[in-house]
Amino acid sequence: MLGDIVRKDFKEIDKNEEVSKIFGYLYEEKDFPIIMDGKKPWGIIDERRLIKTKLSGREKVKGFVVGVPKLDASYSIRKAKEKMVKSGVDVIIVTSNKELLGYVTALDIAKKIGIDKNAEMLMRYVDGVGEDDEIGEVINLMKKRNERFLPVLDGNKFLGIVCVRDILKVITTHEKITDYHQEKTSLLEAPIKGFMERGVKVCSPYEKEELIDIMEEQGFAVVCKNNEYMGIIEPLDLLRD
Image (cartoon, rainbow, N blue to C red):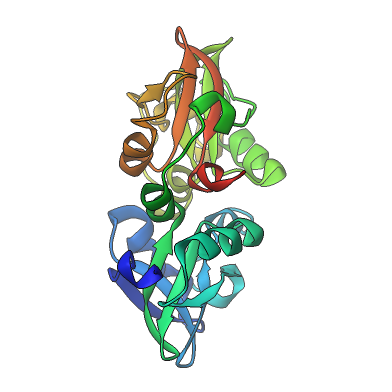
């Protein structure tokens, strides 16, 4: 049952709060924000929507919410998997007697039911960016492709990853530009190599056993063969037939 794997580290956020209230979750790994419509759980924040707007932080949370399945704790994990895959969202809100109990992620379900495919069978190819590409260009690509992760490549060689949270932190906190190209005055003109995540754990295309552990640590997995990039796996990919 879903109640056996429910996570309770959540924070209720009213849909009419200012969006700046959820930035702490995005940057500091605070409790997971579940967006409420009055006393009813409504959905979660879609981070990709946040980069499609020039944020001041005063916008209402409700403008960035995506609805997710709301299932009773007695629901079977197998059926919950089907609902999650059909929804296209990797989180399910769990209730008990119509009261909010917590949430379950795609990784929680994958850990419970296991996976029978290797990394190459689960991955999907996401076009990469170069380390000298400007932040503004990368943001536009994320918007256009509706991606949460973009690999940073040198030819086919994997260098690191850019996550939508990295971009959000840059554009909402206005962090100082690093030593790269200091003559540039616009943050959006700074090269992404100063903000990308390096030291990312990668897995071979044949990996299966350690895949969930890697994804639980990072939130994603990058598949490489001899350091040549092949694709990315996100939590929901683990559940697809």
